[in-house]
Length: 99
Image 1 (cartoon, rainbow, N blue to C red):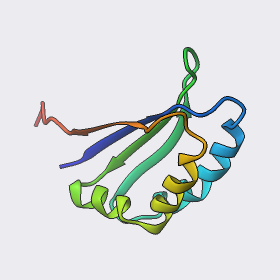
Image 2 (tube, rainbow, N blue to C red):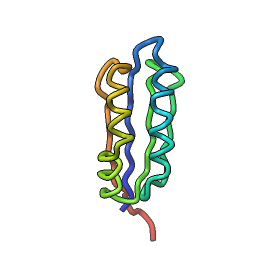
Image 3 (cartoon, rainbow, N blue to C red):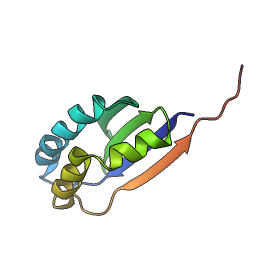
């Protein structure tokens, strides 16, 4: 069953370009992972203007493989110095509502 991951990251003002630059290699590598259906980065239009990772995986095993990847770990280390707090992450499982 597919798994949706949404992560919100608040970045220190003035560090937005550095955050995007740090995220780019992780995004490229993540999109090439088996089991990743899509992996996109967005930025809120209003409010805090947080960055939003919008991810879809084929199953929980694909999520775990992503989280164990070297590119994900490297990005996590780089983002730690650019973010104002730990990310808020929501993991959801698909709900079948039709045949």
